[in-house]
Image (tube, rainbow, N blue to C red; front, side):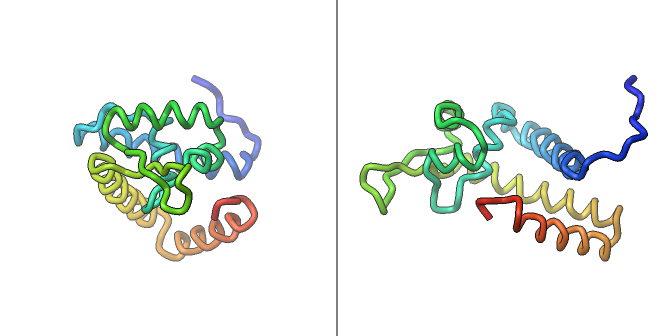
Length: 148
């Protein structure tokens, strides 16, 4: 067992722990629902696909991975029928990655799990603290998320 450090943990880690718990819960729920072939890395790419689709280069940039890595993960997601590639209506040379029907089923489960987890966190923290946390994190996003 690793001894807990008495030092104050940085805010980045304190934000990461609940996010990691949410991801683990989501993957577990997906596996129970029969979507046990999606990996954490694939999920992180899929989570960045917009409703109308997203270009591979944008997925790579947002996920902070190389275009080759994003392409490999999208290839895996496509083979498993989670996503499809379609022509970009704004640029005939480009393609968009969109959620396929199977991917949309995963998104529906993800939204349900996210709501459940947020409800649990709200029950633990209280409504006022949760609202303050949300407002604070939304303000912090203004200076930390170039894709907001």
